[in-house]
Length: 266
Length: 268
Image (tube, rainbow over all chains, first blue to last red):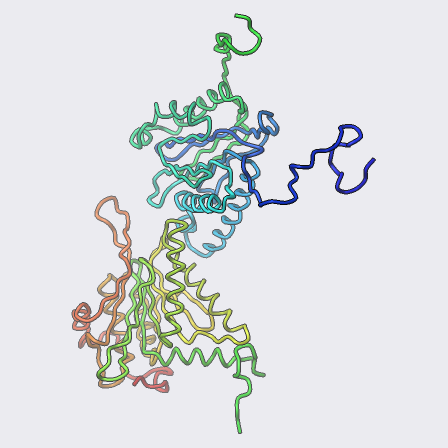
């Protein structure tokens, strides 16, 4: 056995042959993240009359391997907003810690005010901040490899939903979906909320049902997804976050008709 | 003979537990001409007396807009005020850029408070020789803050700093209960009356020596939401109507010198 520290955690040479250490890179320029490693898939969200619904499944994939099945990708911020993360999970954890710090600072800042909720950062402020953060990291050539959705309320107390990605690009729309969701879930959500006016007519129950339906479609067709998911509803009363939902009433009948994959001969 | 050995720097306590450099800085505030600030439920107002170095020169500005929603009134060293004002402008702009909102007034005031306090605790530094009244509006409504060279900051309903300001404070204390429900114009008049109390005999408010600054929240016509009235400074002819309106009323005026007002240094 080779007990030298350099050999710790490496495959044994006598068993596996000489170890290829070239990737360990002892010289050359510093390289930041060039691709995500452990990833979360789509995040979807839709506005309704009195708020926003957001959902993301609880899976963290390592390539195509379903590596962690209990990862919470939605987090509340100051119990007035919700942030949903897709993309690299370690960068998500960094942002999560960063936002916790920001929320603590913000709470102390307005400790003495009569109505803290009024002067604390709202979802629009938070989204602006995150977009500046993401764009700065992109300019440092060290991007945070995430697609982020922010839901809550803006300064005029209207429901707010916007996204920012690893390049600092921002979007806003009555419904938003990241990753595969942009292809699979967004068309479904647009059937119910194509415009702000449509969204303002949706009830909370309808919005939750649309989101659950989209999560099901995503589980059917996205190979990096899971049937356990988190769903958050933001209203004026705060954030209701449920982190262990199970997809209900699945029907795999359609799978029988799919041809061209697997072992069938016809 | 009797030289004070404990006032050479701002990091040494005197045996009585005082830091003389900080107290001297507070004296510098009292050399500046008087500024008055009042906050109501809807507006925050700053009024100031400007001084001219000599007959032929212009008057030194006393009120400065910081950001859309905040302004300051200064008493003391103008050059030190310039440093603080530039710092406040930068912070407000930075906050607007990163968060897309106007900076809460308390946050801003606490920032200059911390900045000024550091100067009282490092060898080789000196305290700022200027006091500020910071008036502004944010999501919590209108605010007025006092800032002292020691780094002390305090939210006030109404306050006055500068030469002979005790007279103005006495007026403000007498009328304290009226301010909360005052309208914009009435609040400005209260400010000007307080200012008049501090004037030396034979001097009066003129369009040349008076400045007024206002920030507020105005209820918009539809849906009852409020809109910010940006901090605006009024000078010259813009203040003449207000000056005329307080020209010879005696409402709530203190008749004789009260408190320490009589012993304080007289404005030139």
